[in-house]
Amino acid sequence: MGYKLIYSPEALEDLDRIWMEVWEASQDLETTEEYIGDLRSSIRAKCKYPKTGIPLMFMGEFMGVYYVQFKEYKSFYRIKDSTLEVWRVLYARSDYMKTLYGKSEYTLEDTDYV
Image (cartoon, rainbow, N blue to C red; front, side, top):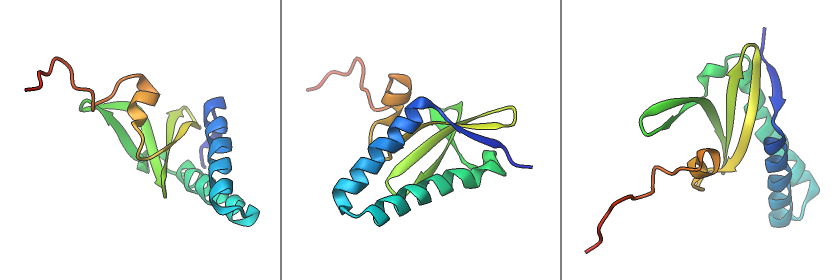
């Protein structure tokens, strides 16, 4: 039995934004729809065994979130009971930790530059 798949409102907004980005780059409806369909399929594939996703680590600790990468995007999801909830779908090269948690592993604090 697989997990039920749901998308948060933020994830749906992310997918709309990605759709527009792919459309603007390709100017081809078929290419755009295929890209989004393949991205969603990569997420749906985790419904049978959701813990096979990549665990999201922050400052060396598991955050209770997994992700799956499809081309240039990472889809972040949580597992709750028998539901796989897609939380966000973000550009893989962005500072997604700052977007997700408001903090970045890349932030240097109390560092003196010489």
